[in-house]
Amino acid sequence: MDGLSVPMHGFRVLTGTGNRALAESIATSLGVDLCKCTVNRFADGEVFVRIDENIRGADVFIVQPTNPPAENMLELLLLVDAVRRASAARITVVLPYYGYARQDRKDQPRVAIGAKLMANMIMRAGADRVLGLDFHQHQLQGFFDIPVDHLYAAPVFTAHYRKKNLTNLVVVAPDVGSAKMARGFAKRLNGSLAIIDKRRPTANVAEVVNVVGEVEGMDVLIPDDMIDTAGTVSEAARALKKLGAKDIYVCATHALLSGPAKQRLSDAPITEVAVTNSIYIPEERQFSTLKILSVGELLAKAIRFTHADQSVSALFEQ
Image: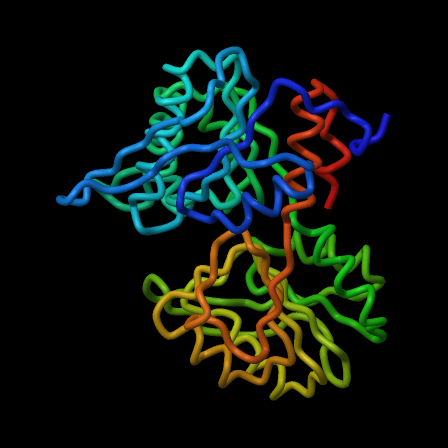
């Protein structure tokens, strides 16, 4: 039985205000309407949540990324609590983007481990399982004491670049930690592999030191899990261009595009920046070389399989 033939009775998909467009895309792929709920603010900014349909005994999927502002996380927690108190049979939190994931260890004295704290709150609110997309580190799955299905956006990007018929391609890992991801892209796109030796003197500041591998005269793809201030990819693109690279493509699942990111990416010698709609990107943060790909169908398939208690392992493959 394929994903399209799985019966979808007795389940609901609902969302907060974090990324309603993606939730609507998921609902469209599933052939259902979003569950009606109210999410608004009191005069002092306090968040109010109410489920406006009967969901007693239903299998409920809550789609809500937890990127800033912090109200996105608070909305998620309140939605989970409201759904639990409305007697849902099972609650699955769908995290297109897991905010605070970079705070995953105590690498300095007296710092919080934000990723673990967020996981604790989601579980404490009443979630039964989590469906995530491209966590910043894979081991974040272990922060949850409930089942976690961790999906990858790589198939979406791979399909996009195959249509371009790129030849003589080299996939460049922006740092050593991204080498495994880059190797996966290189294998599926029949490209070679190179790695950037990068140092980060301070947070959100990256310095390219060396490039290990051949890039001269070749098209380049730089994959990453997120783009925040774009310091890494913009400096990488300039370094690769100086070494003789031809067209440079950048892809990242999560487009935070904070601060100077738009200007940096616009000024950098990059042919295209492909990202997904895991995070809502307002028009004022978009630019001419930005390409937004949808992960709605991927997440919809995962919801179908989860609801039918079928394996979703095929969707894990990069």
